[in-house]
Length: 74
Image 1 (tube, rainbow, N blue to C red):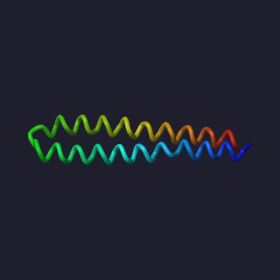
Image 2 (cartoon, one colour):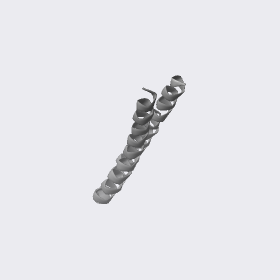
Image 3 (tube, rainbow, N blue to C red):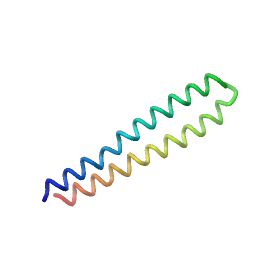
């Protein structure tokens, strides 16, 4: 039964992969937007940081779930 807890914790950590991909796409889009319209870089960066914070929060939730599952298994 303990192995199932560990597999579940591993699956929960996969949320970090999605966050990394999301942050990469957001950075790419931000760089393109700023290069096309440098005057709007302030507004673009504000939206960028909001998006990065939300993506990073998803990764943190997955990490916390994995820790909770891991401590339950131990």
